[in-house]
Image (cartoon, rainbow, N blue to C red; front, side):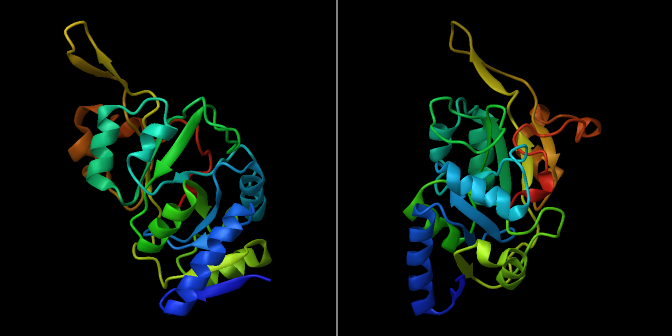
Amino acid sequence: MERLYDCSVDTDLLTGMRLAKIAIQRAELVVVPTDTVYGLAADAFNAKGVAALLAAKGRDRQSPPPVLIGKATTMSALAEHVPGIAQKLAQAFWPGALTMILKSQPSLHWDLGETKGTVALRMPDHKIALALLEETGPLAVSSANLTGLPAATTCEVAEKYLGKSVSVYLDAGPSPKGEASTILDLTSVRDLYDEDANLTTEGKIRIVRLGALSREQIAIIAGDLLEPEATEGSAESAADTNTGGNA
């Protein structure tokens, strides 16, 4: 039977976090608060858990979930190549409402769905989400809703959507931002060094979805590497074709 734990109550918080960790280890699902909207979480390295997440939302393998991480340094372990601009964006906006799509590390043993060799990474700005990530490691997390319905900004709405498909609900009140993350595609961006160790960066950053961070905020860091506005949305994200599904 699913349970909702009020994280403003110390005893509920301790119990809920303990049971959430156990549920993740068992390939079960947990609803967790983030700084954007509530997220539906599973162990990113457990194919059974990820499959359960997609099934609960009514999504297929063509819409793989993003991965939440607890530290920016984890990005280098999960991505094959982390260009300097990705590190600068992380420094500026993580923890926060920025999701970056990168080419995934080919040596990783995970199955997030049809990712086409990419992974969408975000470090959330929420103490409960970060505390859980510290206990579990990277989590596959999509917005805690049914596909096609508005994202849940309260735990009660998430529970109404997902019911008994979720083992543990962690309730931390209304989502601080109430708007999903901004998604950037950096899969074409690569740092190159010549024989004199001079750096050039090839490729462009594409905005897949504007969310809690504006284009202007991104442009301050990305500069000329950001694609012109007219080209945004011209192609689907390789990591998540349903861009409304990310926390």
